[in-house]
Amino acid sequence: MQRNQLGFSLVELMISITLGLFLMTGVVQMFLGSKQTFSSQQAVSRVQETGRLAIEFISRDIRMAAYYGCFSPKNGVSKQVDVVPNNLSIGGLHGRFDEGVMGYENAAALPNGVDGDGVAPDLGATIKPIANTNILVLRGADSQVLVGSAANAATAVFARTTAPLVDGCVQGICENSVVVVSDCAKARIFQVSAEPTVVVDTLTLQHTDAWGGNSLNFETYFDKLSEIALMKTVVYFVAEGNGADKGPSLYQRVNNEPPVELVEDVENVRFTYGINGTDYRNAVNMLAPDWAQVTAVRIELLVRSDKDNVVEDNQPYTFAGNNVVQADVADKRIRKVFMATVGVRSR
Image 1 (cartoon, rainbow, N blue to C red):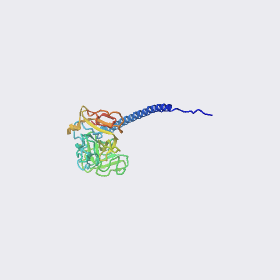
Image 2 (cartoon, rainbow, N blue to C red; image 1 turned 120 degrees about the horizontal axis):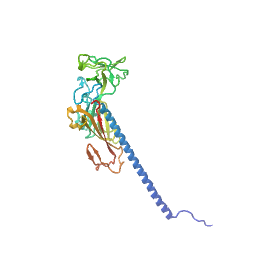
Image 3 (cartoon, helix red, strand yellow; image 1 turned 45 degrees about the vertical axis):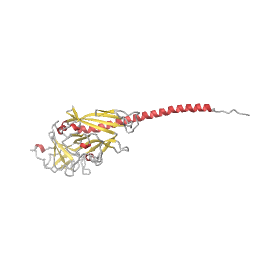
Image 4 (cartoon, rainbow, N blue to C red; image 1 turned 180 degrees about the vertical axis):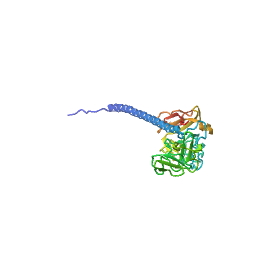
């Protein structure tokens, strides 16, 4: 007995395959579109996070620039903070403590410039700053302030503390640290010449210049209510990063310690300096007396996405007053400019 053969004909199979291909094409297109949208949103989030973090780091230190404890220098009057001249055995940018805010147009303008390989010694032994990026130098006292326990002696300053001596240091103050002692009328900066000592609750910081201890000499006498704090120099700049693609990053250097890579994918930075909060100038246009009059710093950061090909077309942007058209850039990254104006609190 003959049975009927069941199944699809060749025509039916071809129609089914064609319909399946159309459906699969739609699914793939939807998947690729979703992936592109996800990548773009993730890149935007990363750029926003990088920009906010960078602005926050820099702003915090700008606010503390030119801070000397109780003493606040008069705006526009230079050389109000005495720096004891002998044995400040520190190099690079960690000095000039009477200058709370200072900037450089580029690495070549630094005191020691750059070498033949593009390394800037003032920023680190191997650091190569990105060309045509600004450098910001901020100097001031640490926010942790000690209170004097007695009037200063000829070669020592005394403070109250309950902190223990750890590896020869108390609250970050060690031998050779630079310290400021201040009252509400004056300030003096010196270098600690021996390991600090703590007896009961009295911290003793020695120095080699016999400049204090006489209450008749107002300029060098600090009573038991004076404030004592560690001085630090913080430098911000953009240089080649340590990531796999060696992309640009924002760096921070404290004193003469090795620079720290704060955030990646910061392509450029520009600082302008407000004289009395109105006249904003580039570092190259600042004269020596102008730095004592800086009351605010304007920050401009150019941040890019960490991955390329996250947008369909290259995006133009405006940085430092210039319109940049990325016609010759094929990376298709997202770029965003972040701006903030931060006041120098002590001024």
